[in-house]
Structures are given as structure tokens and as C-alpha cells.
Image (cartoon, rainbow, N blue to C red; front, side, top):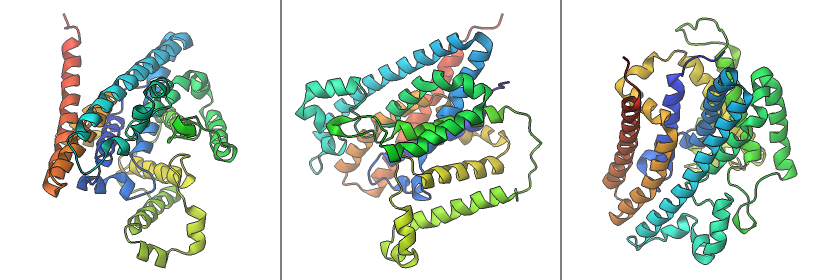
Length: 371
């Protein structure tokens, strides 16, 4: 049922990692060209959807080849690795933020990163860290991925047999969660910024898309698609982009946006994955899939390097989390000048790309030689 790896998935995972890094560096000019500035959704939706896609694709193969028990063991092993990485990364991040804060006099980076809990109550903070309740800024995606991947054994066998039935149940939970107040607890009587009870729908949809991608389909033509669904999705993406850009000029936005529409669509919640965000991402993904039906374009040197980053998304994500506060520190020390901001943004991406290239080379060197 499952075929080889699709390099387009790796490319967009790598692109999402670049966007996440740029979005996490305050005042970064390149952060103005990321997805969040041209639509309701952002790189987080790409990350979660493709995590579901890649997980079902990988562990679906394991289940078909080695059985359900072995697939569960491998999923749980991977979840444990993610958990250990999260704890280690948080410790490293705190050290870097405290170091950066000692070199920046104009801002309190510890407070901006949400780490005052560790200073005010370190013993409770350590417990909350182990329970995934203490998540400073930049760290939210990884705990979400841990919970979603750890839950995959519950739905994987049903996903492979009746994917749309799983989607229906997931959609029901998604719709009920905001109304019922379902979320996981965080520090200070708070809740998770990425609500796993709602974001699980995007993970499940990614898994359903993985199964759908393995089914036989008609040969795609090079002509621009003109189906009604494609046209509706394209219009929604364009309208969302125009509306998002109008937020930069509140007077223009208020002048052209009727009050009743504003009351209906705002706030566009990221915590509960607002339907407008979800629909924007799905529309964008559908349009992109129709416009890029083949993977030949991923062979050019730049795209191939982005694909390498996507193939080692965990390691590259962790590096991006570490680099973001360092870039912010260097920018602040230089007075947040545009040249320095551009330099740190591009240098960070080059380091992430270098890590991806090194990990791929190391993987090749570790493979046994053919005799």
C-alpha cells in the first residue's frame, strides 16, 4: 500500500522550519515574508499536518510489514526520544536565554521568553517541565508533537482501514473541544497554547492525506486546474491574504471590513485552531498540491537542501530553537539594525542547512558498503 518517500513533503517541512525560525526572532525583516503575514494560518499548521502525514506513512509501513505490536513499540520509542529531547532542549534553551539576557541591557529576555516561572519557583518549574506543563516561548510545537505521536497507536489501525471514519470522529472532537473547554493544563492555572484536543484534527487529516496519496490516481496535466473546488480554494487563499495584509493598516481595515463580519470572524484563535485557520491551511495545501503535482522541481540545488532539512526535522527544529535567542541577542546588541537582522536570519538558515547536509552525509557514511 505504501510507496517511497515524497520529496515534496520533506521540502515543505524544511520550509516550515525556516519560517518558524524567522518568526521566532523579534523584529526580523525576513519574518515579514513568512506564511503568517499572508494568511490566517502559519508554519505551525504545516508542521503538524506533515507530522501526521509522515507518521502515518512511516508507521503504516511498519504495521503492514511487522504487525501492530511492533508499530506501537516503535511509535512509543520515538515518542520517548522526543520527550527526552524536549527536556534536554529546554535546559539548553534556558541556559542560552540567561546568557543572552546578561548581554542585553534594553530588554528582559527571560520575561519575554516566559521563563520567569523557573526563577520564581524552580522546584515547581522542574516538575512542570517533566509533566510538559512548563513550555517557554519557542517550545510549544514539540510537546504538541509528543502528545499527538504518543496517541497514534490508538487510531493507526482504524486509520489504515477506515480513514474517513477516523476523520469524522476527530472532527467531532475538534468541534466539541472549544465549547466544552477541553484542553491540557499548563502553569499558573493556564492551558496549552497549542490545544492538542483541537490540533489533533490537523494531525489526523495529515494521516488521511498520506493514505490518500498512496491510492492510484489519474495522470496530472500541466494545465492550470479549473475545478470548482480548486477555484474556491484559490479565492479563499487570496481573500485571506488581502485581509491579513490589511491588518498592517487598521484604518483601512476598519473602513472596508463591515462590523458584523469582524464580530463573526474575530478572534481567529490559534490555541483552538480556529476554523478560519484550518480552512485557510487546507485551501492553501490543496492549491499547492494541484499546482505542484510532481516532485521534479525538488531536484534543484536550493530545493534539495531544503528537503535535507525536512528529512531531519527534529534536529533542525532544535537547532532553530537554540539559534533564535542567540540571533535576538546579537540583533539587540547591534541596535536592531536591518543589516545585522538580515545577517543573523540568513546565517541561522545556513547553519540549519549545514546541519541537514551533515546529518545526511553521516547517514550515508553509516550505511554498510555493498559487497
